[in-house]
Length: 436
Ligand SMILES: *Cc1c(COP(=O)(O)O)cnc(C)c1O
Ligand SMILES: [Zn+2]
Image 1: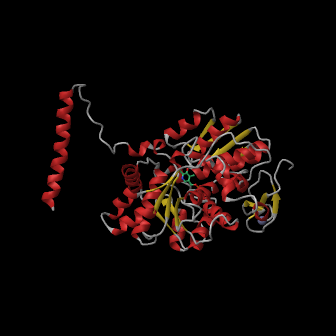
Image 2: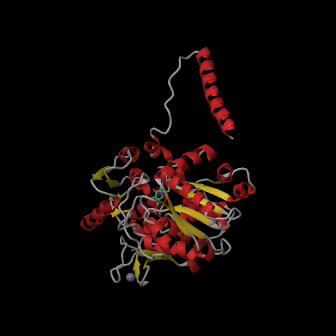
Image 3: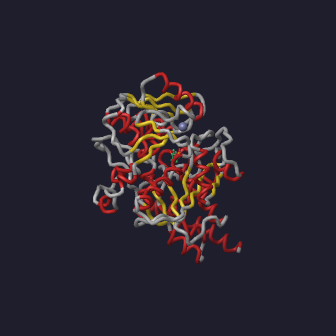
């Protein structure tokens, strides 16, 4: 295709056959997934820390390492979300100890709860997928989604003037459904779980000339996730961390953060260093963490039953490669129960001021577990990937907080209210003191 750069193309992950650039995700020879490969030798001289630093703070600063068609002009400044330390979370986990002080120095949050435009890391993958959808001449884009992808495809399609068809399990969170409809997308609710929705989309993709971001455009889509890894390294001062903790649904993000670190190393932008990859899942949908914990190299599909809807994929497309990434790095995978997810959402909000969705609760809960298991050590530089925003999943907190009774708009009323509140706190404190 003439409008494609020569420096990247599709290759089969197993047999290595080259497929050029086209909307296709599977090798016809061996039925393995395709992946974008780059000519790193050609890129080496032009991709430097300095050339990147001169560009605007968004994911397009890494354009050479993304599959972007010739002449592509970004229409949205996606990505470059904040990376910062989490000392109060460390203190909550470790109490008043030396370990708490050490963790406070070494624990980082990568906050894609504020990724623009739709408040999850899915904006990154969609930005790359739709750039290619346009180049391939699709006027309609589509996806199967557990929620965040739906929001992102709908928003980016609106911005680019593309039609969007979004397929979701019927029981998704209302905010994620509304947050798709508002962009004018066609939303098709399917009475089934994500895996059934996804199977249907594969069939539709064979029938219609539509760009399905996570079916026929999947190799292009998946590359967008690498920008999380590029940003982590750059924001740590062009240094790789010792550990990353990544929530897993289809298992793509975790493998792409590894690919990003490998590419930066290959290009000489960071020093080579072993990084351990830790996968996080909800116990109610944990096909990848179960495989890691039982020593299996393959996925045993599950029927999802968890409040962490955005991660509820029972038969993850990249499960095999996620397991491989985790094991070869010397990392591990864990999962947490739904009550632990809720506790972790509240903990992160109350300590660091970040309101994350259920997937972030999964990540924080899992990270706490990994510290307690000594799989992550206090002195190691560790990054937790917070991938989505809590305002989309407020349903899971329904009933957790009391609704306060209203008071009259009078100073005396407030003084009395304050007194009552302080007294109730005082009683609790006294009881605790007596108890000790
Ligand atoms: C999709 C999603 C993930 C996981 O992505 P995969 O690449 O499918 O593993 C993590 N967090 C959130 C909030 C997501 O929406
Ligand atoms: Zn092949």
